[in-house]
Image (cartoon, rainbow, N blue to C red; front, top):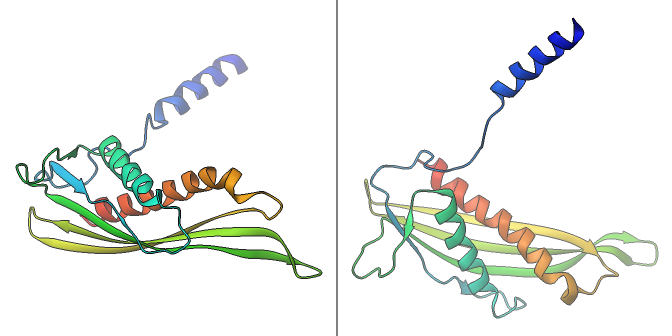
Length: 170
């Protein structure tokens, strides 16, 4: 009897479990078909030179993967309904978790990006977003050896902030 009850409970729970959760075709207006992301400006003095390109490509990839929007191959011929621009304004490393003797046990890499999102349809609009995200790491670690991992972690959060702003404002 317990086996039948347990089997019934498993079937009931798995039938209610969501199959997937994503922004795929979320609450976007039907008029939105094409987008463009201009290469982000890099004004943060300590950031790696290639960082703006790296984050720009991550944004393009995630918008395409998580929505019905397609990247405009030629913005002069195919006018995008969504245009994303941005400026990387902060890239700092600060000590945290200070221990006796003024030594830091951990450091924090913080990145701030200011975004402007221009929308042409269904009505003209402009959204502003500032996303500031961080990742902590042991101060005994060499930053150059873990920097790419930290940037991947922070980029995911920044892109998620951008997608939340874009898709939840509608």
